[in-house]
Length: 259
Image 1 (cartoon, rainbow, N blue to C red):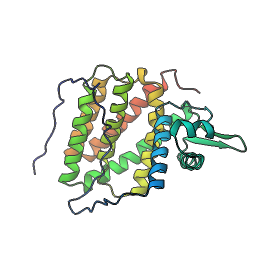
Image 2 (image 1 turned 60 degrees about the horizontal axis):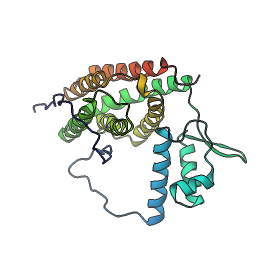
Image 3 (image 1 turned 180 degrees about the vertical axis):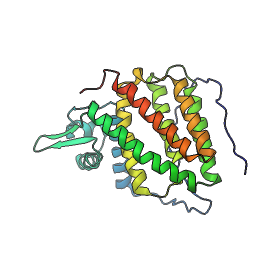
């Protein structure tokens, strides 16, 4: 079967994009989609959890700051119980800390933590990518090509630092990395990767102006995609590790991340 590759599209302004692009889950044609709506309390809890999580990752709630229940209930227009349950879930992801009788706060960041996150991402994502390349079919290829194309559209920009563009880029970058490993069936493995990626994004937002240029990012992503579609696991793993490690080096040397 032939391979399909998407050339880098011409630069295109994306300021008008208003719909967040979410990572798509890999599925075969026989996959049954559950269309049942969740009940209202679960929907409210999930929406609140996702909103607080997104704002912590993006730095809206900066590292080390307190998360008072009363203020959050007003900010997110939900009950105190919903806020507490959302924060409890975020504690398990190491995004929130709790202090005896002193409430909640955003987990701190440090250079040592970034180094640990980098090494774990490389370890877990390389193995997941190898297995995904081995198991992926044409539907996996289709999802990967689509995610790569959408990411390249944003990376055609000369500046990713503006708030509107960086949010879209982060969502599409996550979608691309998710698509790479989508054919790997281990839900636990991928859940750990997702948790590490969320931590990683916090550092990316902190030092966005010191990160690599959009053009360099696009070259690296394109190379990883081509190796994956060519079923060259060794090359894909090597390129993925270099991509993650080089990006980490930019962040570590930025001087913007606390010791």
